Amino acid sequence: MTDTTLMTIPGQVDPVPIARDITPRADGRIDLIGLSRDRIRELFTEAGLDPRQAKLRAKQVFHWLYHRGATDFAQMTDIAKTMRPWLAERFVIGRPNVVEAQHSSDGTRKWLLRTDDGHDFEMVFIPDADRGTLCVSSQVGCTLNCTFCHTGTMRLVRNLTPGEIVGQVMLARDALGEWPKGRMDGLGDEDAGHYTADGRLLTNIVMMGMGEPLYNFDHVRDALNLVMDGDGLALSKRRITLSTSGVVPAMERCGEEIGVNLAVSLHAVRKEVRDEIVPLNRKYGIEELLQACADYPGASNARRITFEYVMLKDKNDSDEDARELVRLLKQFDLPAKVNLIPFNPWPGANYECSTPERIRAFSDIVFEGGISAPVRTPRGRDIDAACGQLRTAAEKKSRAQRDREAAAAKAKAEAKA
Figure 1: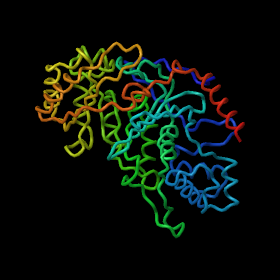
Figure 2 (figure 1 turned 180 degrees about the vertical axis):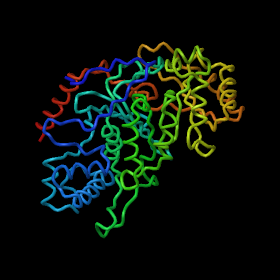
Figure 3 (figure 1 turned 180 degrees about the horizontal axis):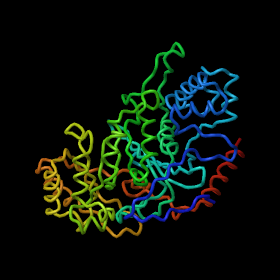
Figure 4 (figure 1 turned 135 degrees about the vertical axis):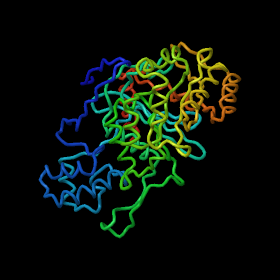
């Protein structure tokens, strides 16, 4: 049973963000994942350490959590053995609970995850020849009701906390076995280590999973700051992309306070069509959205804004639509790239994917207009991990059924032992 209720916020109304500090645990301990170095220091001081020692221990623990990926205080070898039990009595190192992990025939991996209060969400890892991209969720459910998106058919349950967001990246690092080595300057004879993408599987992060990241701005910002911290997960902001359906008031703030690459779920260039498939357009129209893109801090030809455009048969895929797309992007002088996304079907969807010939013709027109318009290859369709397919209401498999299967698997393993 869950112990939080569903949010009842329609897509045309801005949710009021209510920041939560730390979710209390039944055992009274505090989960450190998702907390900054300064917040960890404050907690250590409140727990009884003198300020100087709290600062040192916070630096050590922060390093072990976010740079080494430690999941147990006993692993923190440069902290005194007598200190580790003190930490374990008061604090815990969390990870999202894995309900199910699936592997696609094309190498894509999807995890069904569960929060401590019993809500499910998903993350996806997409490997390519030259990169590996983790698609991270920001909310349980979604409030935007985009009609082509399976996630949009869910109700919004709640925002994910910074720990639940950054925890997805940490869980992926666990699964891929690629935490960097190293320790802190001045605390040992090993050089400080920094994460680099060279030779690693996880090289990029996209905030394109379940939810609208800019409707959970504070928690997404705090989580990504931990991801980008040079003494933490140390992934460059140039390797992180945040996708929004067009929450205009938060876009400039995103560029200033987070500074990552921006992707915009555009999907249509005519008001009546975008009003239908992206209802947020009724609040923030296309021209208002494109002006916010033009004003986005840091956007340049070297850091182009990506416009996502799902290809829906006889809905938004005509030659006229392609020409209008080029016109609009040039009108606002946008450093732009267009990702054309073949529609990924899901049960009950009211749309069909455009034909390959129609998609190719659309792409050619945009390319001829001087704007890059590659067609995204669908990935993970066989495990419902492709763009627009994430949904975790348990129609596919009830939670009770999953629990029974887990219990059966555990009993089988114990019997073998």
